[in-house]
Image (cartoon, rainbow, N blue to C red):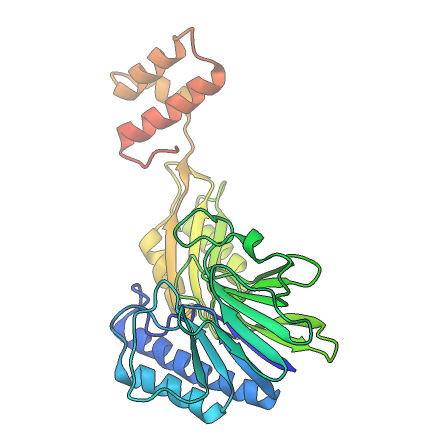
Length: 345
């Protein structure tokens, strides 16, 4: 038997940084890929698809979006199980597909010939002859939070596969000898806090109810953050070349944030607006962030005549209670403040 575990699709979510045209492209891509997911499931003779929360995003779900998704569910004829997440609002259709099963407090257990599907904060003991899926949406790392999950409540109950949603990165581990707990991660990324490949989990169960699962990358676009150290580079062309070399292997369809790091001097030609212009056409979305810090020439600054900077540095240097490390840090922050720069702390 094969199954698919997905979560956190957030269909309808907006990426605020995009233009209207590019936002439309992303929304349409997500609908096309969602249809392809159900086609993939059909091709592998999938017995069930589990959606562990956050199918839609917020209250403003368009009729077109809902219809497109549920048409894909209905056409596939695959049993599809849905657990509401913290971003899902109530959604209503005149008639949900017969193969779409909602998991909630009233409908917390479904029993089929070879497997069962359940949800709930506490789980019952299950029969050994069936394979048992349990769906939850929350954070296992913070069990005391509002969205927390205490894994201890699900140990040694006979659950075979604990399908988790809410965390947007894939992870898998064993809870006990019998139970696998898995975050599928989000199907599509929607911001620079969703780094790495995104996709779904394909589950295979053999006749002895042994389970294996593998992560399948699926999203067309990923968010990428690249730190680029420009220390020692003073010319605009040098910095541009360093950025180009660093980003060379990133596919053009991605969302890219290039972060300049390291130090610069008063002579450095950063020309940030031009650099951003040079690269924004090379990726679906590109932004340049300057996290560099000014490299101070303390000796030169102290030699300035009638200068606030010189007076400040002399006061710090003459303080007998400060260590050399503390003096360096205070000098750096003080000069940045006098220049109007962002502080190094």
